Amino acid sequence: MRVSISIGAVLGALTLTTAQDRPQDVTPDIEKPIFICPLPRCRQCPSTQRRTAPGVGFALEIGHGTASIRHNDGTFQQVAHIPGSAEYIARMQYLATSSGERMHHGERLLPGVDEKDLGTMPAWLWFHVKRYLNKLLLRPADPRFGPLADMANQLRKEVEKHLGKSIKAAAISSPDRVRLTRFELGDIFDYIWVEDLVKDRENPMFSELYSLSAALAGYGQGLCANYTSSYECYREEEFASAPWTLQLDFSNHSLSGAMGGMNTARRSSGYMTFANTTLGFSHQSRELKDADDYWKQVESQVREFSGTVPPESLILTGEHASDPLFIRAVKNALSHLTRTPALRSLDGREITEEEAKHFLFATSMGAAELAKRRQEGMARCMLRPDCRSRLTREDVSSSSSDEL
Image (cartoon, rainbow, N blue to C red):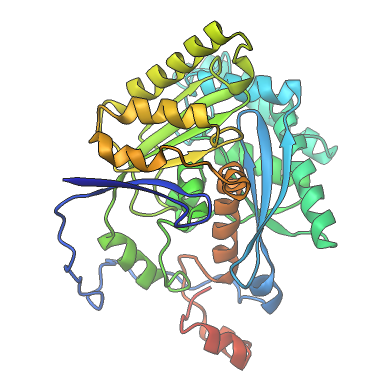
């Protein structure tokens, strides 16, 4: 088994790949249908304005938020990095370290509410009454998530300031350990008056976006080429390899990560997750003795988390993922899982400023990429016949798809 590490194949990407003896020349018969049921017709026709609008992505991380734009020519702009308020950080850290128990329909379980106890249902109903009242009053629907809504609103304003116009749609990613629900995200989007481009009622597997998937897309991985054709995209994803991918996020207020087999950036989330809010970069002591102990704890945390299944691919994200001491700690932690020569390519190599920015914005760039793909046609429905006549010759020639 040969193992190699490459940094910068995609700007700022840090990827650890394992070249195992996998069949390389297996070409699936993509003409053979793999769908049991045909896709439904789209509810509406695509507009040229929607198809040509830039893709906007927000990333709500444990201690900060970022915003990126994906333009029609495929280029990205890293727009804003906003540190979280004390209330924002406290809420995200709580979500990252709590059990996150859900109700049967996906809603986060409320304190004091038990689905099996009908006596607690009045409290659940009253909570939702207050949610809708707050929306009518243009407040965050759930005050507990108000700081997150405020962060998203700040990111929206920065993007609109950069573009010089208002935005109508965007995508938001959240850490795999936090896993904001579609209800919480819906409240956030309602508060900032922006459409959620990730939500897809026809395909619930693509109703939420988490950091591992977003980071993968931000590095140009796990993306089908024919994304405006649902059939072709799903065929590509069906036969794509699924390397066991490890994502590590190192920021001021946490060290977190997720790991899972990823054959696509839009249908998987971390099977294993962790978040340590005591190992954020801001906790590092200025005293050398304590600092050495700090980095040993970082190394131990990474080794413990990644020790179950050796990762085949490594993605680093976050405010301080480019720190040489962090990279050294990661190398030391993973050295027992793979051959040491595979990690030597990092020795003596300095991460450029541009690459460090990519680490910071990777998740919001991935969200922007998926947002743009949704606007251009990535969906699970077939375009109605009457829509074809409304498309210009330029629109038709840009894609052979019959889908929205």
